[in-house]
Length: 426
Length: 165
Image (cartoon, rainbow over all chains, first blue to last red; front, side, top):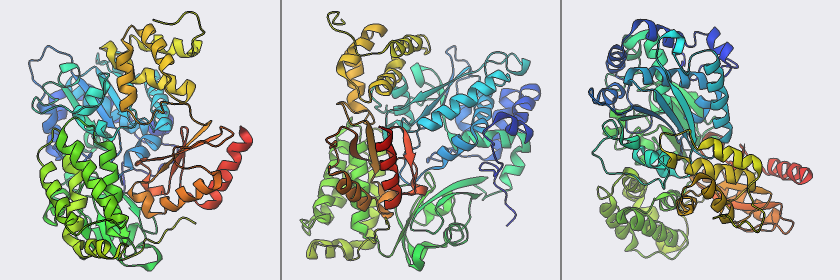
């Protein structure tokens, strides 16, 4: 296939500004500042069909256009670099290897939304990545791409790195803002939407790292070029993070709509030890599992919904036939009960009880009625919480019961796994 | 108020960093998390006495810092070993053997998760996803990631750290 990655470009030392400049870096910014109005930039992004890469898939340009035209408050940009969705590790690579792509994208985005202050909210554990960004911002500032009067255009932008503290919830956009405002990362009810009333109650745009990295390319090569990749409604490329039981785990940037089979067998080297595929979680641990018979599904927003799952953050978690599905659901449920912020009861109590019940099934103390109890808890969490974390805790549990109820029953009856996870740590 | 009778915990450099943070944000309250990072970077945990000192410098009530400290799980609230070993046991790492990795370290160091070795060198904890699932199993020691772990790698890493200490 002729597709060449443009986000995860293989150029060596692309984190250094000289190398980035040599390969056309910051030309998009320079052109935009000279030739395009903010409205034209937004329109180009709308035309490209770019949708948010953090998980929700909302059209990026449309989001920008929700900023009130007549606001007298400062407008803020928050780059969401709080990458914490289990199975997702693309933003980390972008920030380490291509920090200037992110910075250039952030400056163009800020120009489009008329913002002079941007924050990059990065998960606390990413210390090396935060330092890498700080170094790159210093380089970009020295060259006049960030700071006052950028490239003589009169446009100013200050970018501040903000390090989180290890809370998954802060990747949720409203929690990210409350965290940045100096408190616990509690999500807020929407509306008001951040574009109207966000950070410090000002209009705010929150975009994922990968989303922002696409912006310079769209401005350089145009909306039509971007739309020539992918499907009608899922345009462009996507970074698929493949982890678990494959021969070559890693990030693969490919056009939207590539088949899961191609991704796993042509790019990720196939299933380890020539075993059979059992299950794939295609979009991070918050989306329903897909069984092996769905391996020909296309990896885009629409096709994955049709197949009963979601693209989410494109964290593709692969499990082979030796994986106990009860064990997997137990591990995933432990994560959500750990990360529930505790603000609203259906999530705080629901995730805790799902974990406790899965814990007792996993450890041979389950009762047959626990299976329906789990489904009942799922129904009582879903749709009843302030933010999507509660909803996100449901799919792994519900879909694993839907497809593998027999394994749950075996586990409860026999107090052990139907299949034994083959530990690969040697 | 700072207890003037005893020496403070925060170093001069930490105090300077905290003072430097005060004017950065549109709302001063935003410095809470950055201040916690400064304290953690210096001490390796969030000491409540240090929090009080920081609160006094910033003139933000210490309760706000304490509240945040109790919420953000990456900061230990008690002293830990010189090397804080954080082993991911989320789904991708589990698929790649994180549970036996944890057992291996437990056995090797003679401690359970949450425990610290008698010489004060190593504390072992389990953590949720570190965002490095493509190189599982993964652990983080203090601020450094160690990826694609094997028994031989773990042996070498721990030995190197022990020799550095």
